[in-house]
Image 1 (tube, one colour):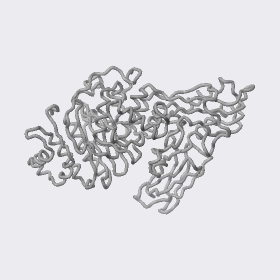
Image 2: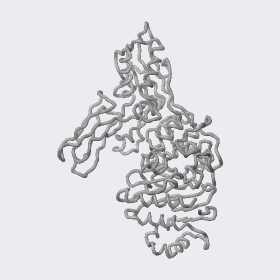
Image 3: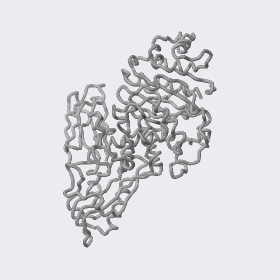
Image 4: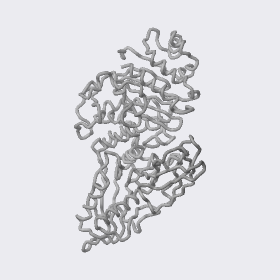
Length: 550
């Protein structure tokens, strides 16, 4: 086992990547590469190095498609040793590594036991069992309503509770509308810098004060018989008869894959699916954004009440521009008759990081702005986020933060910042909740299919968040020391499994001290060319080499 306390590989400048392409494998094996790195980085003679780690970094840089790529790598131990440093302060697109920033701040400020609240209220008066007014579903930001994620309550159970509030208030008939009210998080659902084609996808659906089915709509897509034929497309769920759809998408040639994108906006009742779907592809469910979750929730609850014998004369509405209820009443003037709550925030954080759920991340960000800032818009919310990071000891000075999920290409972070953030988490009472939210290679979540050839013993020690978008691949997280991940309170104090142990009010239970040999790392690659499948094995090699260091 390598003694980390005696190892420091410090490549302090980007000269490593400027020169690495000139270093051949035989030069590395002969020691010439080691001498070059010492000479260029100022390493002292006689200082011990980790050849496997250095070689893995060189192989990544020299991989096909990496010419001209931008890279930032930093790996340190919890007790302060630097293992490798390649352009640690270079600002790069983090993609979904941004979620580690948002979730850490949410656990810090909101706490692991925080729950979102959804209320049922009404305007007008109740006379002889008849509500002469409107029934409101008052959203409080819960992103799990109607979700099929295991952490979410079943939709019939949620609707059943809401219906019990209605019956408990003595309402058996509504002479008015059922209103989906998302005003708790007002304004645009999306961050304004998101790309147009992303905003219509399931991962770009955007945030609402009243979400439904994670603000997604399912379409069944089937190729035609020949290239050029129209696709067979139909809406599966949820049904939204108040919207109109256009499907100019066509069947593509064999082997051409799936280039479908759905274009939609909350400013129009028309959505259009464009692109091609290969003739040799099997029918599949294509998920796209639903920009009217409030109206959708109201419509489905209206139908539920009708089946329960509670009629509504006007049907469903929301508080928006297109389907807004006439004479919308301010929330503070509504009579509230009951409320339901979301899963605890620690469960939402686990889904956010493990499954890389953009909606959950953006909801957490804007909730922090709503509760602790001047408003829930992105500018105010990001200002609150920066203040929380400063309090945690991870000053984001010089970093550019535009959203909570990393979907924006205006997000720019450095490997140095991400490692400082991850190190600061180890001093927080929620550290176990946070670390357990990060997936492990081969486990459930967004990195299930990477490092498949690596032994389970090694993968069990790795907890990391991935980040991907076009020409971007990033990882950051922890590598726990051997023997620490036993599930019985080892040196890391982190349980194996889903992290569902007894916790205190801030989302944490009693923990052992963190081992100083715990490795904290950030590996960021931007602007590579070619398929990700060509680059990923080299990234895996760097992570595996890091795992050999403790």
